[in-house]
Image (cartoon, rainbow, N blue to C red; front, side, top):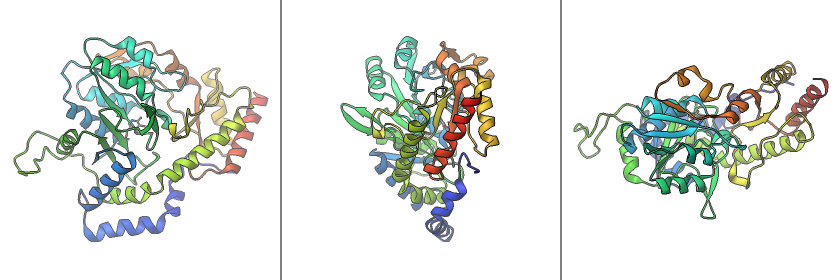
Amino acid sequence: MNIKFLDLAKEYQDLKTELDSAIFKTLKNSSFVGGKNVEDFEVNFANFLGARGCVGVGNGTDALEIALRALNLPKDSEIILPANSFIASIEAVLNSGYKAVLVDCADDFLIDTDCIKNALTSKTTAILPVHLYGRACNMQKILDIAHENHLKIIEDCAQAHGAKSIINEKLRNVGHIGDIGCFSFYPGKNLGAYGDAGAISSNDIELLEKCRSIANHGVNTKDRYNHRLLGRNSRLDGIQAAILDVKLKYLSTSNQHRRYIAHLYTQKLSEIPYIITPPSPLYEDHCVWHLYTIMIPSTSEKRNQLQEYLQNNGISTGIHYPKSLSQIKAIYENPNCILHPSPKAEQYAQSTLSLPIGNHIEEKEVDYICKVIERFCETN
Ligand SMILES: *Cc1c(COP(=O)(O)O)cnc(C)c1O
């Protein structure tokens, strides 16, 4: 068997007729940047989230930077975020001129709310939770901390399109629970474009209009060349919007398939002594399984050996991430980073391994992958 970690070509084949038609329609009507495709997608994605609005931008990192700029936080602000994330989350904070405060995560891989409390200072102005691997953070607790301390919340939703958190006993989509949500549509995400793309969501229409202006050279919609601020260029491409609009219709189904595959993995792997499976979701929509990440709790060599063994048996896997943010030179040497101890994030960096998940994986692939893992554990 040859099992890819991601199979974007198969996904294209599955939706080829609809995607081709959406792309060629865009070529014919020339709505290449902005225009009807982008407007339609923005409405549909906001509806999917249950948010009041959404603004398409160039990519997920820009979404974070633009959101931070629109919130207009004080210059010497400290922003708290998890040490277990992709570098873009902290890049956006540092490139915006703020101090990044890294805290540890809990057993569910996500930012530990007790660590947030311990890291608060008089300079803290915002929390940037990351719904990592497709799992929604405990937003009720984060909201409570934010309200008590007058903090803004910028949600990094790049891996969690469709994940839900429980707020006042009701399920709510991530992306509009905090003040502002930032999505990436990088091709490998749960909702992926065929190039770079991103979006910002919120229930605050004024804040969204500010984001829209920042992302489009500070354009003043009422007086086009009388720019209201110095912005930048980070607009959503019309072809990408057309593709995203097609794929959005299948997002719930493909998230549901990911849940089914994750459930199968957990069932089959929990019998293998060496392997720690990811915590089960607290409720069905808690996790959209962007990644299915297991742990091999010994040394990183053991994890790397398992990865190599799987590769030799035709199975591609990934490591997310081989270093916690606090272990990356560009970060720990940066004078604007405040690092709190992150033993868990560092432990994850040496023990996690992400298995293939997505529409290209069915029960027979899961069976095979789990058998190979079992064989490795018996002989190593
Ligand atoms: C992918 C990702 C981003 C950045 O998105 P891009 O579209 O690649 O800029 C930010 N945060 C997290 C957690 C991500 O996984």
